[in-house]
Length: 248
Length: 305
Image 1 (cartoon, rainbow over the protein chains, first blue to last red):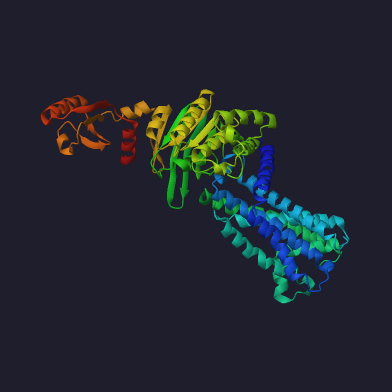
Image 2 (cartoon, helix red, strand yellow):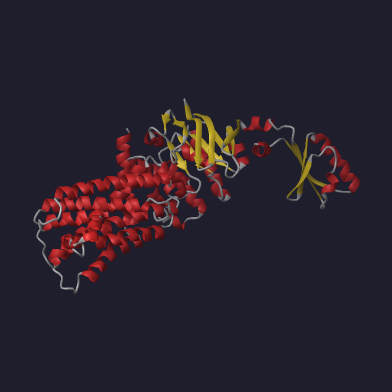
C-alpha cells in the first residue's frame, strides 16, 4: 500500500511544483536568462569555435536550469506557510524532495532542449553517440536538480537568501568544471578542483556524446553522476530532517 | 478500537522538553478538545500525532495504524488543519481543492462532485476561480478546511481552527465540525477558546509545560473546582471594589460594566448585594449567578502545575 502512495505523492508534488514555480521570477532569472547572459558574455564575439564549446554550453545551460527550481520551492513553501500542510498530506519528506528534484529535472530538460533546437537554426553540432548525449541529458538534469534540492535544505523561509546561497555555490562551479577552459588544458590545482566538481563529469559526458573525445570513460562519468544523485538526495533529506521544526 | 491512541510520547528541542510523556486515547466519533496555554506543547503534540514531526519516544496509532511505521497509510485516514498553515495563494479555491484531492488519490469525477458540494457548503462557490491570495482570513480558513475534509477523513485534526476569525466564519467552522462529527468523523481540536471547547467537546485534555494535567469531560472537570462560583452584578452607577469587602466574597473582578464576585456561597452574596443596594441607594440593573466554569478549571490546573 505504501509504495503506490509514495510514487503518487512524487507525481502530484512534481505537477504542483511545475504549475506553481516555473514562472516565478527567480527561476526565470537564474534558470533561463542567466545562462543565456553567460553565453553572450563568454562565447559571443570572442572568435571561439562554437561547435567545440557547444557541449560545455549545453552542460552549463542544463546545470543552471535544472538547479534553479529546487532552491526556491522549500523556502517559498515555508514562507507562504504551506509546507506544514504539505507534510500532513499522505506524503513523506522523501517524496517531497523527489518531487522537487523531478520538477527541476523536467525544467532543465525542457529549457535546454528548446535552446538546443533553437541553436540548430544557426549551426549544426553532430552527435557522435546520440545515446550518450541522451544519457548525459537525463543524468545531468537529475543530478543538477538534486543539487538544487540540496541547496534548499538549510532551514530558511527566505527565498532570496537561499537563492544567494545557491548562486554562491553554483557560480564557482562553472569556472572549474571545464566549461570555459577545457579539462585537458587545466593544470595543477585547477585540475584537482575540477575533479571535485560534479559539473565536470557532466561536461565530460556531453563531450563524449558529441565529439567522442572525453577525459574520463563515459562509464566513470555516469557512475559519478549517479552517485551524486543519491548522495545529494540523501544529504538533502538528512539536513531537512534536522531543520524540520525551523520551517514550520 | 480507538481512533487515536497515543502512548508515552516525548519530544525535546535541545534542552526544552516540549512534550513530556503524553498518553491519550480518543474514541471513534468523539470530539476531543486539547487545551493549554501558549507554549504548553499543543501544536508540537498535534504535529507528532499527524506525522509532521517524529517523536523521540512513544507511539501514535491512528485507527490502529502506527503513524511512524506506516505514515502514508495513517495519513490517508486523517485530515489536518494546521494552525498557521494556509493554502496556495497563487491557486484558486477550486485548484487548491483539486490539488488536495489528488494528494489523497481521489479520481477526477469524485473530486469534481465533492469539490462542488464543499464550495457551496462553505460559501465559496461564487469565488471559486479567484486566486486565494485575494481572500480574507476567514475565506482562506474555509478553503483550508475544505482541503482537509475533501476525502471525508475518519479523523480530523484542527489546530486553533477559529483563531482570529469573524463571527460568520467561526460559526461556519463550528457547523462544519459538527457536520463532520455527525457523519462519523473523530475530531481532535486544539483551541484557546475555553467556552468553545466546553460547547463542542465530549472530552477535554489540558496540557501544561508539555505534560497532561487533566483529562475528563468538561462537566467533570468543572466539578473538580465546584467550590468557586460567581455572581455577576451591575448597578445604575459605578461602585468601588471596597463595597464588596465581605467575608462571603472571595474576590471581586470588574467585568465590563459588571462586577464578577467569586464566592463559595452565592446565596449569601445575593442577599448581601440586596442589602448593599438598599443601604447605598443603588438600583440593581442585572444579577446572574453562574456555576464553576471550564475556564476556572483551566486556570486552576495550568497555574498549579
